[in-house]
Each structure stands twice: as structure tokens, then as C-alpha cells.
Image 1 (tube, rainbow, N blue to C red):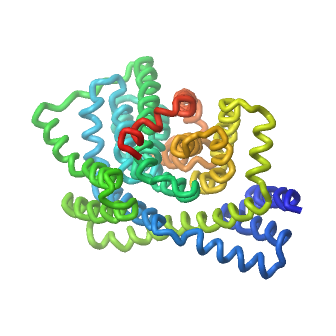
Image 2: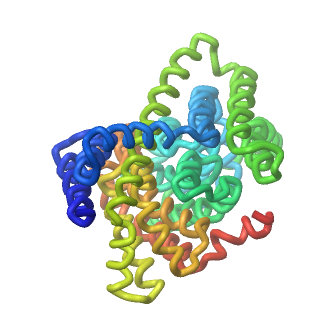
Image 3: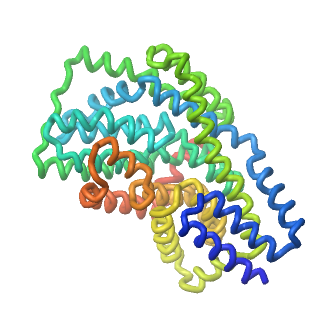
Length: 431
């Protein structure tokens, strides 16, 4: 019966997804149908309701709405323009310097806002007209913006890593945060290498560097924004406060900073809270649904069955990792990152642990692979936003994006097969 129930779970889930049901509802309905095959109706309904409530009854979960709120305040608070000027100072002498500025700006703003979509929108709105004025192809500008925006999901603070921490059974948030730096930065560097080679081929201009006084002013004006990362991540890693308390500090700091810059008005606050509620509600609803899905999977024995299935194909650790990466890359093309993390962590993490893989290392592989889906059709949110702000059609950008895909996948393979890329910093800080 449990094997049949497991088949019903996945068939009903993908059936509902295929016909356009919202993913959270698809998860809940398929889970309820499966539960009712195992238990009486009243037991199935009561157990499902209890699991969904307890699924978000966690103090760490409060960090998610707080980090979302902080990111939205930063997005409305005039931070992006100052970070772009700072990025120009760092990479202004490279061929295609505006494209490199876009990539570095995405890494900085994405880390501060915690949102790849917000980063792609903010950077694209500012950088695309500047690049068009210097003769850059719009497809090139859009591709660089799209390819570099997901770095903010890996470079902390990151709500995605908090979700992984919760669903993986309590992996240290501080360790995940500090581990995300090198993979996220390597992603950005890979994008910049491809952008550099394309710029050399197209003979794009090098931006004129500002004078020493202007450089010092640009750095000085960007320091308060960059301090957010230092304060929040430093406090969490140093044990001064928890991830949730760090998120609250981020909100207070972002409000003070945005008011200081005079880009945030009190009349903007209701709209900011409304956007925060919408985003948080969506994330928490997905988490409650996925908590039920995980419970149902444990009753059906699906994780153990999939583990046995993969291990029957090969007993080679690297072969199994490559199979999991392939599955995650495919899943990322049609499923949003958060539900994918919630669904596939309980399935793949036990398999990885059979090879004594550190859950921090596996978390980096999982999140990195799924983040690639942010820039792939048909549901890549960053792809849609990046094309929209650049005013270019998706089909025109895909060809230019292909070398960026290849470079990012190379980085994914390096992270997969060189564990110290993910584990060096956590070990260095004793995490």
C-alpha cells in the first residue's frame, strides 16, 4: 500500500502542476489524497492540519519575513545607485566595464537585499540605459544582468539558506551563511570572465575612471550600505545574536540608512509592508505545504526507495552526485527555488549522508544548482525580469546566455567535487 501511495503522491502532484495549479495547492492536495490512502479520513485531515501548523512553528522562521522586509526597504532606499558607483571603482578599467559593474553590483545589492529578482530589476533599470548609450548590445547587457543576479541568493544574508537549514534538520544558519560567500563570489567571477571575453570580441569601451577625490567620495558613500553585511553576518557568525535577531537588526539598520539617504518616505511604509506580507505569505504557505509533503513521503518510504534506486545504479559517490545535479538542474527549469529546496532536500540529503557528505557542503550544491533555474526558461523569474527591464525578448537573449550557463555549471562542478570551497570558511570560523 505504501508503494502505491508513493506513486499516487507524485503522479497527482505532477498532474496538478501540469494543469496549472499553484504549486502550494498541488503539494497539499496530492499529500491529502495520499494520506487518505494510508489512514482513515478524519485521521488524515487532523494529522495534516497539525503538521502544517507545526511546520512553521519555529523561532528561526521569523528571520524570513524580517530579511524580506529589510531587502524591500533597501530596494526603496537609494542603495542600488551607490553600490553601482562603488562597483565602477572596482572594475572600471576592464573591457566592457559597465557589464562588470552590473555583475559586481548584483553581487553587492543581491547580498544586501537577499533577492535575485529585486537585484536584477534594480541593476537592470540603472545599467541598461548606460550600456545602450555606450553601444553595448542589449542582449549582452541583459544576459550579464540575468546571469549575475542569482549570486545574491548564495551570498548572505539569504532566506534560501534559512529555508534549507530548517528542512535539513537544523543545519547551522551561521555556517551556511559563511559557506555561501565563496560559491557566490565564484559564480560572479565566472560571469565576469565570460563578459570579459565577449567584450574583447565586440571591442566594448572601457569607462573613464573618476578622479581620486570622486573615488574617495564614492567609497565613503557606499560604506554605510556595505556595513549592513558586516554587522549582520559578523554578529551571527560571532555568536552575538541569532539569525532571527540579526534579521531584526538588518531591518532597523536599513530603515535608519534609508531615512539618512532621504530616499525613503514615511508614506512608502504601508506599500513596503504590503509587499513584505505578500512575499512572506507565499513563502510560509509553501513551507507549511512542504512540511506536510515531507511527512507523507516519510510514511510512503519514498526517500528510502529513491535512495535505494540511485544506489542500485552505481555505488560511485561522484556518479550519484552527477545524477542528483542533473535532476536538480532539470527541476530548476520548471519549479521555483523555495519549493524545490523544501521537496528535494529530504529526498537527496539522506543519500548524500550515506557518503558522509557534510550537510553544509550538500546545501551549497543543492542551492547553487537550483539557483541556475532562476535564469532558465520556462519559469526563471530572473530571466523574465531581466528581459523586461532591458526591453528585449527572451528568445533573443537565450543564445547570449548559453556561455554564461556553461561557466556557471563549471563552477557548480568545482563546488561539488572540491568540498573545501564550501567548507573552508565555516571551518576557519569554527562552525
